[in-house]
Length: 231
Image 1: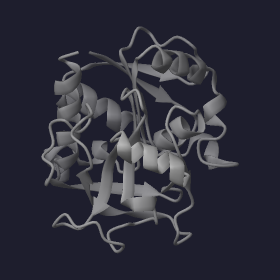
Image 2: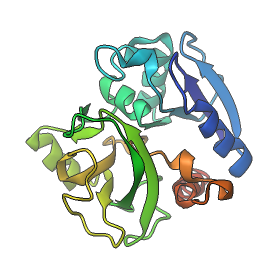
Image 3: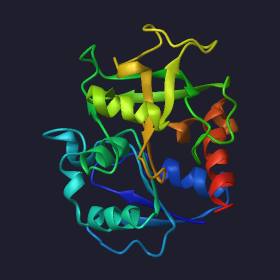
Image 4: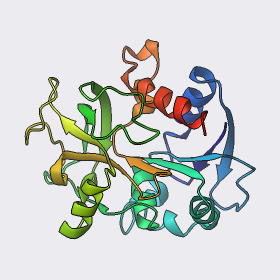
């Protein structure tokens, strides 16, 4: 499986993601510059975290119109895989590849800390290898991470099992106190109806190396690698 990591002006998690994909998982990785249109034959596009274009207007609102996004939209429309993490999640929502939107945290403050998340479905490449009761400790780092979708869209997403992760306590309870940004229904990640585009606010790439003292995030990448290798 060949991965591509998109780099925008303001991206700051691209090298972290490349390191995990190459060094920890052994995948081939291509760097994709935002002004290019060539996806270089990648099978899976990763849109990393950071502050693309300084987060002016709205997070991801400018990056969504970069030339590379035209190719990513076609790639996903043809059934190709893509995943956005944090700012990447915001960009994919702005591009209409994922339902809903990411609003300012309800605290109106930037939040950077470890949180716990739990898979909301096993019916996705990202979560198929995770136990339904497994709580993962993964960092967040965002000012606009409050997931929102209209009631009818949210109902449809729940019916289709499109919610990937929910914020929880360390023992797996979905409480208000475990929700770091005010997201509806504690939602931390979602996917599209076609189940080939994924987005999440927590940073699994920041919890995927023994040197960091936490490899919970690597479990997510391991699940992804195992699932797509069977496609």
